[in-house]
Image (cartoon, rainbow, N blue to C red; front, side):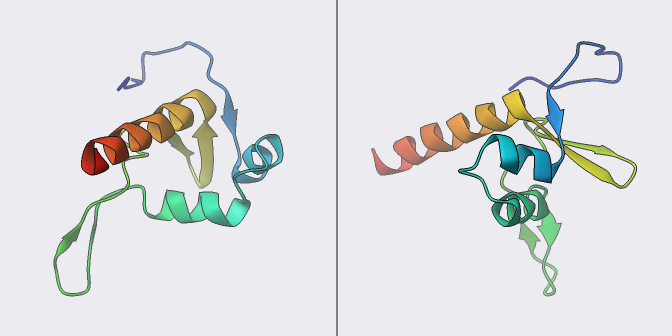
Length: 91
């Protein structure tokens, strides 16, 4: 997993949810927004910790002010990690 820092000035392919959904029709805006909503760990109403899906840890979500952008290469690294994780569980 590659972490980007503030000093990392390399250009990245960043897209809004709408732009990403247009580039990759397999991912609808609603599906992307749901993934973003569940990307970070959160606390339930009962005070229990609910683990996120890991997109933020992979750097797939970039927040600049109110704008939420998707890093395309990090997003697909995250997707690949989900497949590896699923294979380990079922295999």
